[in-house]
Amino acid sequence: MTNPEIVKKVPAIVKKINEARKIMIISDSARPDWDCYGTALAIREWLIMKGKQVQNVTFNKIPEEFFSISEVGQIVPRYVEDVEWEYFDLVIGIDSSDFSRLVGPKYQVMIDRIGINRFVNIDHHQANNIEAIIPENTIRDESMVSTAQVFWEYFVKPENFQITVNMANLLYLAHCSDSNRFFHKNENDSLLFGHELIKSGANSEQINEFLQSSTLEEWKALAIFLKHINFWDDERTMVLYMRGELIGELEKNFGLQWQDKNLDEIVKNKLFNSVGEYDIGLIVWFNLSSEINKISYRVRGSANIDLPLILSELGFEVGGHKNAGGAKCQVTSKELESMLRPKLRELFQNKAY
Picture (tube, rainbow, N blue to C red):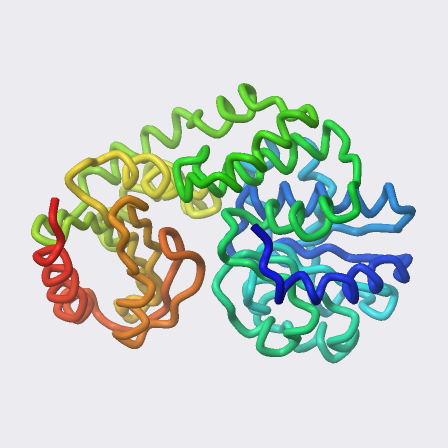
């Protein structure tokens, strides 16, 4: 269900789109997924069908596994300083609420050269600096499972736009990926959206098989990760510290560029959702000073735990969703455990299982 306050902002953004001839679409550049790429490519087709000249860009290297879908080749990696920003009538950000994730640390270059009135954002994550700077140009609905669903509910449905089979497949891929094949937030509007895409020609069986499959390399990586998982039994939490011996094993088996392969995704998307005794999964990354600089988390939806709130109360900078996201901090692993474990232990002691 759409939010009436958000609906009020749509006509002005649609007017900007209708009046623009040359449009850039930027996908989340920090940690891309199928929602950001699939939605961006579907919007590309939507805009081209409206007679627009469109460029899809990202400001980072595209991880190699995404090229399994040939259309990803239409998304071009760029450097912020090299873009002729003045050439574009409009820039559309997709699937991020944070300028630094979308464009990178030099995002002010873009803002200075296009001005905030020529930038709009479509997203479903928790609010961050994009909406703080341009609230009137932001269509962000975090109640929706995917940015694909936001695009559908606020732009496609209101104009009764007839999507192509290719758009249906791209949007279904995006939505199915972010919902973990309808595992997360399995609610009527999410299921109905999937049903509408199937009616429009989306090949649900093929897309689900594609998302469910993992490469042999990923399974080999999981075997290594399993040796290094920490289990906080009383806190129903699995923790993977990305450091030391583990990093050495990954480099030995997959090369120095192992991070470009996003091998940790199999932990987040397969392991953390599958071990019944544990409701929370954390992947903890460290900087060169052996301090934690970021945490990726997954929370089982049925556990009904607001981990982002807990991390925020501990002083961490949190982004993403209630059940899947990340946090930035500068603490040691011992400090993390002393801060977080008592909170989680108390939480689970008060829950009935």
